[in-house]
Length: 127
Image 1 (tube, helix red, strand yellow):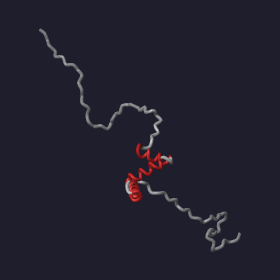
Image 2 (image 1 turned 90 degrees about the horizontal axis):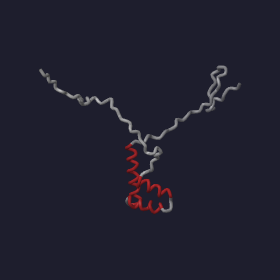
Image 3 (image 1 turned 90 degrees about the vertical axis):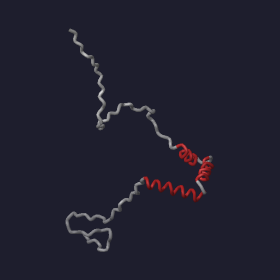
Image 4 (image 1 turned 30 degrees about the vertical axis):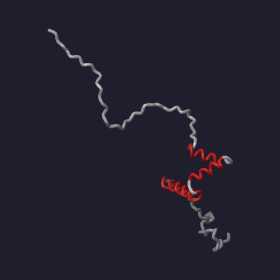
């Protein structure tokens, strides 16, 4: 078996042990995940978007007028303006029936008021 070339970057050196397979020396690059969006970043994105709209159209009212004009021709513009005005539709499949089970609070340490339902009748002795 011939020796590996010393200047090859993809072949590791052989240490002489029997059946010690040589692996291709490649690095595994870690996958980068985007940073998690928190409330501050979402608020910052809203500020950036409104500033961009004001820079481009002068004010937000002109922007929404342009979107409303485009909504006559494009479904996506119409969908955007309706979702902004009325909110996204909810997927309610349950029919609106909710469980009305009583809730028992075991962590309430306040004593319950004692209601005495007994009837007191004074005893009169007759002689």
